[in-house]
Image (cartoon, rainbow over all chains, first blue to last red; front, side, top):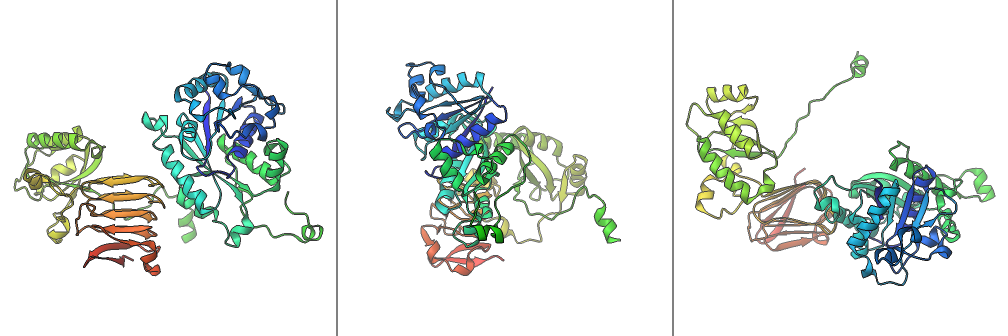
Length: 272
Length: 242
């Protein structure tokens, strides 16, 4: 049986899709059979981030409505073995996403895969609630700023009440906090909330901290998940996150203010 | 010397703690009568009976001997866990110890008023006569943005934080053992005796019996402090508990 992980946040633009792509790729690189599903019907992005937008024929809605088989819709990742992508529909109405349909798809995938990563749309409406409904674990992506923290808090409330595990009184969805776009310099100068501020309010286990990095934007535009870029701080931070998800104890990196050394100031080389 | 002491691995430390505890004040020593009343209570508020620890207070009973074992069995059958006995004669104390329960001396030294603050509006005289000062609702965990936790009767106790965008309401008082960052409303049915208590004040809104104060109206010196809020002459009076 696969473990179903939802990547969610409430707020848009905090890095859900980037994180879902990076974490799914990271899990697959570690030898786990992984599928990542885009739940953002009408605003699909995951295929772009994963660099497979030109190979989309069928999508999740086609499968739910019986117009295509699951294997026809799954796209095999070109770079990573063990990794498949199930894209969302860009044209369909999002009401076509039904709980029964999603359950059947997840059940079928569960037989084949070790991990199912669900990339949730922003907001707390139908699509976001369906993405989290069947989850075993949740990665709550949060930026170090107040509105993102409040929206994540709202999502955590929904995870505790509006999921299958909650409704069946099963053990609750395991919640992980993933802080993205963290800039230690701006935290030091007081522009951003500190790591401790965020942790204190959300009060859940921290699974990773991704520094603000040019590598992320570059990776998105090239359609290569940032974990492939192991020279970058963001790539390493996502790899650490995946290790922690797999239960390993990895020390936290990239959260401290780095004074620029003499050499990097002379040659202008910032962090990649 | 002290280094050696430090190095010895310690298996535990003793710590003083004040835990909220339900006192079950017995006015009858008859296990059958207790059973009948408990059965009724369980059907009214099943959420309360989750292996809730209780202290059996026998101060109001005049009987030198009690069927303590049977009373405990009745409690356990209704998911109440007796952990100690308060008051009673020496034989009562001995039998409490024999049953593995703790024993507290009677509470006569303390002022009665503290114990008898009316925590719930008793719907019928029969309940009023026997109601122990119970808490309306205890919520453990973080109350998150968008969540509303209410105690339509009695007090609300939150063991955890109330986050921004969350709302906690009670007919009686609101107690928050943690930071209060959201909205807290006490005395929602008009109880003017209700209060709000928290360990760290950052509340967006405080309201008692319809009178309110917004975060903006709160003296900044009181923020982040442990405080109590009480109604005085239709004004919310916030004072530090520290």
